[in-house]
Image (cartoon, rainbow, N blue to C red; front, side, top):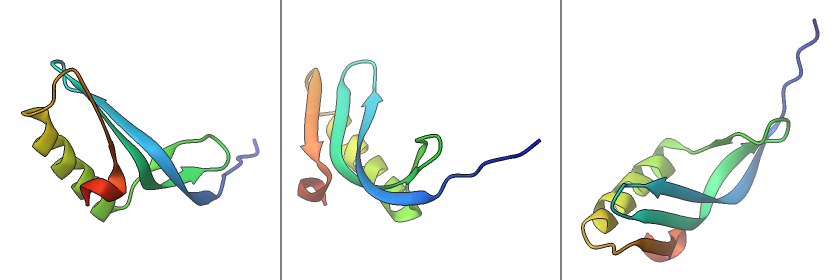
Length: 73
C-alpha cells in the first residue's frame, strides 16, 4: 500500500466556532493547510490567540460575530 502525504502550505483561512448562544467567525487566520486533504492546523501562538478572541467575544456577541484576525490582535 502506498501512502501519500501532502505538504503543509501557509494560507489564510476562516475559523468558525458555534458556542450555542452565538457563532464566532474569525477571518484571515494564519494557518497551515495540507495540500493533499485540506486539513487546517494552527501554530500554538495562533491557537492561543484564537482562544483569547473567542473568550472575549462569547460574552459580548449577539447571534453572529465576524472579525478579522489582524483586527483582533
